[in-house]
Length: 570
Image (cartoon, rainbow, N blue to C red; front, side, top):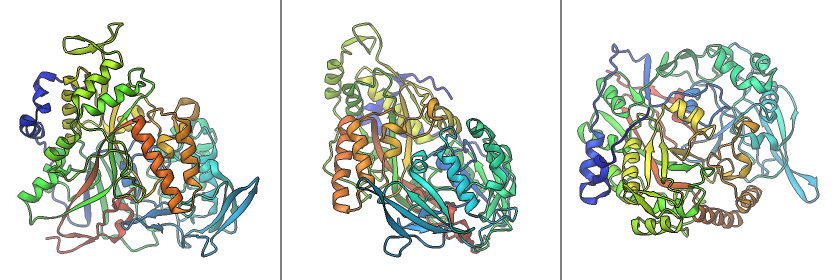
């Protein structure tokens, strides 16, 4: 959705005395109710703000997709709510101590690791076919093919071989001893169904069975399977008869997509939906207001987590390629005022991509204070000295103009976006807003680096998660590599590449922390991304729904939906 904003209407947002009233005015939007008949508690209706760009588990790093798919399948390992690695599809975690992982000699002083996993003996796809090592081999075959376009391609490149022991047990021979060698957060693809779609790897993204035959029961092995999809509207699930775990409480689950967060809140209050997804639901300030108005109707959980709200910068844009412009952009933003006025200080300002909650965080990093005068000085130094109608121009009379996009309908994001637009206008930067639905923004614009300048969104990570996919130069997506990787900024730095390579093979924690420190210092010095704040996810849960356990990491609550129960629904 294109938004043609009149900057003069928002000038007050950059002034401390008017900040609060302007923000409140922007947040009071019309509420549109999506009314539906009352549903019995054999059906759970979940509200969510984004529709998945694909249903294939190994395309696009989109949280909405994993929230939707985790009802139907599980990765081999995941992080739980205590930020510990746990088995989801395996029977036990392999470690060097328990003999499940063996250090291997690759010659020339290099070490690899052989890691052995056993799949759950009762795991079966929804058509009754056992989940086996054939699916493991097929999934890795897809991942290793450079034409497939899957996410996490670097992991697959590191797999030297898959040694099959039997139908359920296999060993991965890896080309290095990674400090997270026990983690295997991949989703398996059913070889017996999907193999024909991979006959032409270059067309696999468009031909894969998850997107062409979504209702096929054989694609899923979790507690639920997908039976109906209305793009942009809703996803329907029923129980999967082959699920081996605890029987889920609901016969049917519906995820309803309501992109406008104000409308999402209204639907919850009206009873049209039962529950909001949390990480993809209403904003923190909405939840805080709800708690004041409806303190006894819901359980309110505010889960701090590793969710980093930021602005990716397209560094191929010649304006943004200049570090002075990037620093000027950040100095012009009053991030503390945004945190105080929008979130009552509950979402702290971010200075780097590593959260203070993460053991990898180093507090001794460069910080950029709100300093409009410094911003103006930097822009002058960068050659943007000439002012025409309040907009800076360079010596060639080109305006300092940038396009800024985010997910349409995300109320707080759009508010922050307009605040930033106003603050940047004060130092002479002309910013034009161009927002899109999440499935387009993430599936096309961001994933294929189509954003011309600025893109605002969030990364969700796991504790001490390597920044390879977002910062290593080999992870820049392009048509040549089938859009693999998440380095959407196009950041290239030889030292950063070497640091990330070294980090991943450093098992000793203290030595690894020294590398983490340098990575964070380099990141804050070069600013390939503009950090905004770390999000706390608000969960507004009806009193009758029990067992929802927020994690604060990449593992969505739906990964344990079989543990959700109903207590006194009436």
